[in-house]
Length: 116
Ligand code: HEC
Image (cartoon, rainbow, N blue to C red; front, side, top):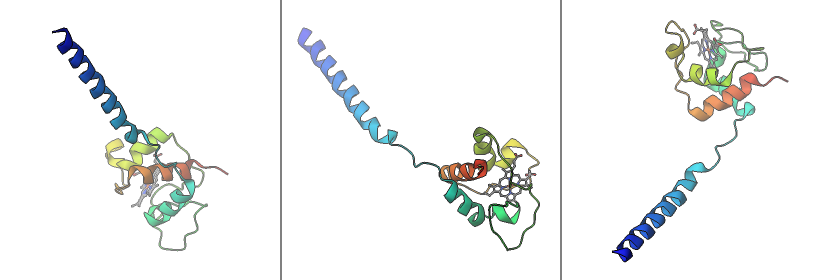
């Protein structure tokens, strides 16, 4: 009986250790958000068609229906939600959900909040 309890204890220990080891790869650092990539996304994702931003050169068609974002900054937590799904925050929002990935959103936040 004692041997059985001991074996069970060892098994649990091994299982926990393995589980702990298995969890390590998921803790690898995410790529650091890049304002430079955010600036490119601001053009490539079509933000420029609705928003002016003095830090982005754009000579194409602009509807200018969104606010000027040249001097805009906001809380990253808000922007994370807004850029993922504007209508979830304000049902009357005109800005569409642009199907951005979480990393694209982080890059855009870094760009929008960068003031130089
Ligand atoms: C089809 C036009 C359109 C596109 C494309 C668009 N927006 Fe907007 N955006 C708007 C409008 C309009 C508003 C004002 C709020 C509303 O009615 O949705 C807005 C609001 C915002 C705001 C201000 C939110 C607040 O209230 O503080 C930010 C920041 C923003 N947009 C960023 C972006 C970024 C970044 C992109 C590109 C990934 C983008 N927008 C693409 C139309 C657009």
